[in-house]
Length: 330
Image 1 (tube, one colour):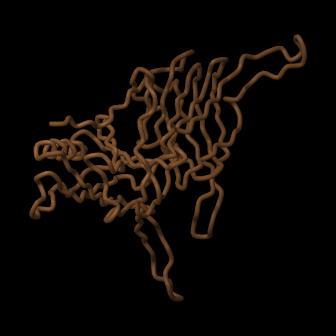
Image 2 (cartoon, helix red, strand yellow; image 1 turned 120 degrees about the vertical axis):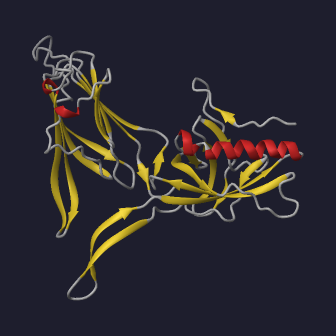
Image 3 (cartoon, rainbow, N blue to C red; image 1 turned 90 degrees about the horizontal axis):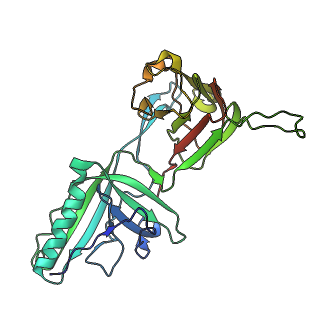
């Protein structure tokens, strides 16, 4: 009986193999791979393999679904109150086969386990790579469909499963994290040996760029020394009267936490979704935020002016920002 051969990625070796691109409804030509919770890669568009997605019947890969709440307007029509993105469902028909009954059974069982284990071990990922090498992915969880057709001749050397995959977050995300690094430079005498301006990027203003379609919730890592951390963003938000400019910010007072001031080389990580503040040794520092005024702000699409302020910063103090852009479609 032939062995089942999903692709296991070597983290220190070359990048994973990508199956040949095929035409997929709603997204065009792409190579698609399913990555189960263990990190094992299952090519989905290699038509020479013992399993592959059937283009006919695929759906749910387009723009995210939304619900709209509105109020009737006395002059007719309605006015939008709120728009909420909803979890999406992806319909994913798979053909599974084998050289004989036992080979087919092995493939059928292995793929069933690869998808259903998302209910116990966390989500898997559908990864879509375009012919130019760019790609996006979406987190998926098995919902239903691993039943087979139950028709004459099926279940012997081939069968078809029409899966429904549930996506808690309806947006696709980029394969590579966007990162920004700012570090306090060492001070130098302006006149020695010649006129010199030393770097002071931590304290000041900069512009962040989100290339995605929707807002993202970044993670911040701050390296000491620092006694207090303030991050501010100037954003445009939609209100009843149209777009307006607001400034959102939060301050983390390290001296008010159980950790105390951040010393040289020590770190604190601030997650905006879910809201969480942890020291490098795992201490919960959320009580150091300036509640109730703290806003752990998101980063909207496009450019956003932001300000980093580190009280007590010295050479070596640094701010690192990381996020994955989010997109409507693959």
